[in-house]
Image (cartoon, rainbow, N blue to C red; front, side, top):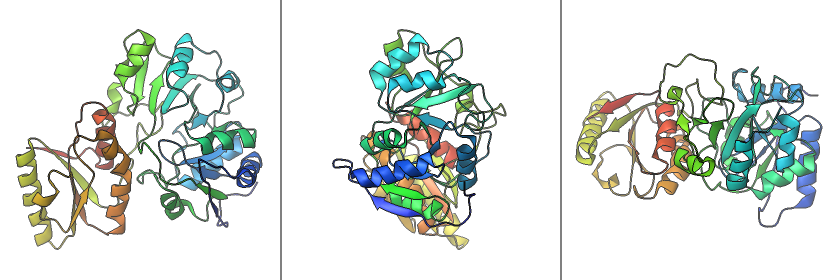
Length: 356
């Protein structure tokens, strides 16, 4: 096995509607040989390696510069694959799989002996998901492996929603990138822990606690550590404990009534510009004309939650490309997936929020 040095990264375009079998066989072979391949899912791009091979897990951590106590999600293509990685499959997992798999839901269950602790960050539990993307599912099947895959970015940077983002972060560190075009959802999967007394959401996402409760017929609680920035417990789920998704510039979220938010951001912008800083503002269609910043990035219409989620990471990456010194963002407490969007924004801002 090659260690992570500088290697040539092959980039192959793959049309999800008409998959090139030859390319996919080559990609599957690389995974089977212990190499890393980045691939599209419906949420963000994943960085895949053989989930049951500890050396592959180590390579994933090394390529990303990711702390090794941050567990990896195991991606499967059939529900029966769960039997290989789970000690037992709870009844709740079957119900949730029937309702949401393939899809943006990750379940945490007790792990079987087949899963190396290198993949689970040393935990006795394993996170499992079945992605809803033809390229991802084909790669799992072609490789003959179960695929451990965190997001395909350098640890701490905004997650990649296009192959170009993966190339920016990981070219020369991984064997191949499968370019399946922009992803659909744009934020990572919801994570539900099924090893506690009550099912618990450890990472909010497109599938909400209400949707999970409805299927399970029982209350689903939200981990208090999601909101607490200073939670020091060992993470059970990816990204619970670290500053994440962050652009290079400092970022501040301004929360409150729309007019007050616009006024405050303009006031802060003027102060930063007076210090010679280049300022970016993340705004909506409704407010973008009201700001005086150097760069105004429109995330979409406030009513279109899906568009906000889809554009979030791309916009955070644009801030890096435009070399801004400070970023101000409106708050997006939208009705359905607002919690998931704000979870990502708060982590990107290191929980720096001004209430007006």
